[in-house]
Length: 143
Image (cartoon, rainbow, N blue to C red; front, side):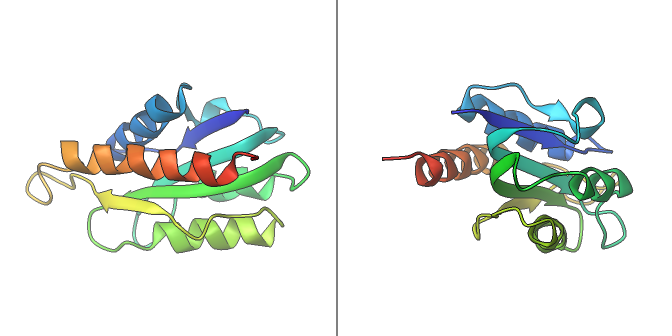
């Protein structure tokens, strides 16, 4: 089974979650900037942070280039400092492309500025991200 973990991370929070998911999946997480829009995969884990209640424009642009013929399943993860809006935004973008998206998503707080959420993502949150990945892979694996 081919699995990809792609992310955008301005502060490093989403990268930490991506790396936890990738470790569980036995793959290497890649920044979206290093991935091709013609990505072909059985499961695409895709994540971003929240920036002013939006996801980064590079994430939007990347998803708009994806084809349902090349991505069999997608799952969404994110980090946030205040509002947890990224999962629904990313799911909506993927669905608009005709890509099947898991209803379950993963999000956790990320360190924001110097004083907000200083200890996030925590070790427990990264363990939860691994469990999320394990569950998605199990659901998408043919019997």
